[in-house]
Image (tube, rainbow, N blue to C red; front, side, top):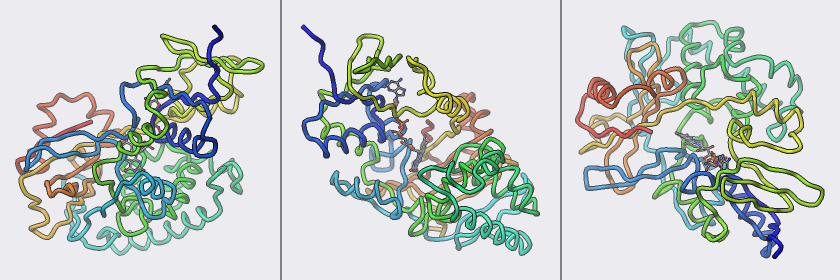
Length: 386
Ligand SMILES: Cc1cc2nc3c(=O)[nH]c(=O)nc-3n(C[C@H](O)[C@H](O)[C@H](O)COP(=O)(O)OP(=O)(O)OC[C@H]3O[C@@H](n4cnc5c(N)ncnc54)[C@H](O)[C@@H]3O)c2cc1C
């Protein structure tokens, strides 16, 4: 018996892989598509999980959660799959703690933190410069951006050092880099940063939770449902879990895709794993050198996300939004928190430990997290870290 030849094999059942399969199916209903996923679940870096809460158990996203109205593809997909979004709660005062353990704790209501007048001037000119550069970026192919090589040879750190003057703004930008990318500014190509900000509509829309920004909405019931519903539409029988791809051999007419337990033939392969994992697959013939160079030089960010559930949203009662922004030079490990109260009314905060702090904190024991939790939050809650 000759082995089946699939039209397309998709490697990875995260949002990219399942969306690719779904789009192909919509174009051609009879395509034979096989999806091979290394984990025992779909969703990749989106994961929705049960957490004990005030009124029993509720569900929270411990991976990707926010979407924004300007992100038209994901918004259309959410609608198409019959899911709903709800706005990120951001009413009330926000808390800002930068400048080391002795630094002033300030509160503010606007989208821009309560900075000194000099730092505000510095920030205004930096936003203007970055947004001007964003307007020149080719988001689809950043290498087509004017001065791409020069911008790519700089890090976000070197750009900030050259174009901002106040220590306070430098710290703010480092915090933004950590909280969005899980990376220190010195670890990231400035061109990549510009491409990402340009795709979000500019620097402020990338960072904020207001209308039109990247943190505008969350998905009711969690974002993993997107992948679950996509997998159902593509056909669960053709989504093979626990099937990590180890090698892809391209031959004259077809390709062979190998896992620990089987070999599958197909006419085309779509690899959707993040670059550092795509680099672990053996390719024959070897991938073009530019692609190899990319996967070897594109590190992942490092981010720990935690969710703390509470009996009540006491911060709302006191006129706070739940948003805390804290510099890494304070003795607080997290860089940012937001209100994460569920649509069902279970009070929670979500926060991130990111960049260098995430490297240090990922090796801590649970009791050390509990100590920090009682020190930082100062109220009884349940901590869930991923
Ligand atoms: C904590 C956290 C918070 C985030 N918050 C947000 C947010 O609020 N908003 C937002 O837009 N984005 C957010 N993101 C990013 C977002 O989750 C990701 O960009 C998105 O989920 C990536 O989807 P993907 O399909 O491209 O990759 P992935 O989700 O990584 O999917 C790749 C899949 O490939 C599988 N795989 C890897 N190697 C192999 C192999 N060899 N064989 C078979 N399968 C393999 C993996 O198991 C995985 O399932 C967040 C990410 C994290 C981690």
